[in-house]
Every structure is written in C-alpha cells, then in structure tokens.
Amino acid sequence: MTKITTMKAFKRELSALPLAKQRQISARFIRHDAGLLEDPLLTRMLEVIDKDAPTAEELASAYHWSQVICVNTQLHSDLEELNPGLQAAHFVAMACRTALSPVYEHARSSSLALKVSMYCRMANTCVHMPHEDEKPDFSYAETAARKLIEEQFSILDDFLAD
Image 1 (cartoon, rainbow, N blue to C red):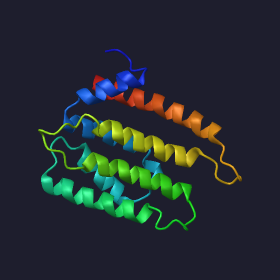
Image 2 (cartoon, rainbow, N blue to C red; image 1 turned 60 degrees about the vertical axis):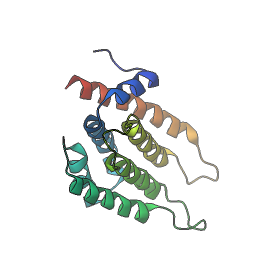
Image 3 (cartoon, rainbow, N blue to C red; image 1 turned 120 degrees about the vertical axis):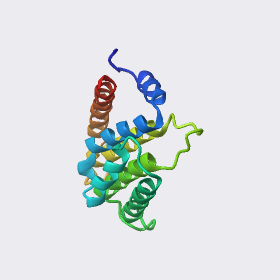
Image 4 (tube, rainbow, N blue to C red; image 1 turned 135 degrees about the vertical axis):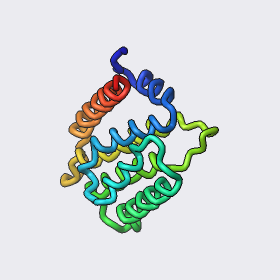
C-alpha cells in the first residue's frame, strides 16, 4: 500500500470506498477533532456513524441529533458576535450531519467522507485562528491546517491498512 501524500490521492482513495466505509473513515476524522464539540450526543452519533450497517431508525435519530447541535451552534443573527469555539463546534456538528445524511445505494456517495474531512478542517481553522486582535492572523491557522491535512492522510492510510 502506498502512503497518501497528495490531495489527489486522498480524494481518489476516499471516492473508491463504499458508503459504509466512507462513514467509518468519517467517524475517524470526526473523532480526531471531537474535542471541539463537547456534547454527549457526539459519542452516540459516532457510534452510529461507525457501524457497518446502521438501521434506518438509528441513522434518522442520529441525523436529528446532529441537526439539533447545528441549530444550537450556528449564529442566530448578523448582529451576534462570532464565537470561534462555537463556530468550531458547529463545523464538527456539520461533519456529523454529513456523515449521517441519507444516501441511497444507487446514489453517488463519493464525496461524503471528503466533505466530512473538509468540515473537520474548518473546525480546526476556527480554533487555531486568533480572534483577539483587531485583524485576524492566519499564519498559525495555516500551519495547523497543513498539520491536520497530513494527519487526515495518515488516518486514511491507517484505515486502508486495517
């Protein structure tokens, strides 16, 4: 097995996975950033995402939980002050919602795990971008994003090796 070192290879390997495996790798991506969302429902959602064959009822319940967290963590008006921690939690919830989204076997699911990985990257960016200054400093967020991408490549490598 070759080591994943490029986005092209990352996308190719993810798109080759069947839906159940895409959900399972999605759970690993989310677990990596799970500390950004401190909600007891996260553990329950990840258990459903990680199953080989979750029932329709389990998926529907977990999807509903992710929707509740998404609503609770989103900005509720243009006048509300941006909270980076809450924003990060929102992106983790969006990652869960994507992984739990209803996908029919005949539908193309090649981007499900990729979308989850991107939401995890956005959550990570929110946390690592200092917001205290008058102007945001993207340099640390960029370093953290590059590190996370490498870690996601490694997570996928390990998953494919299992």
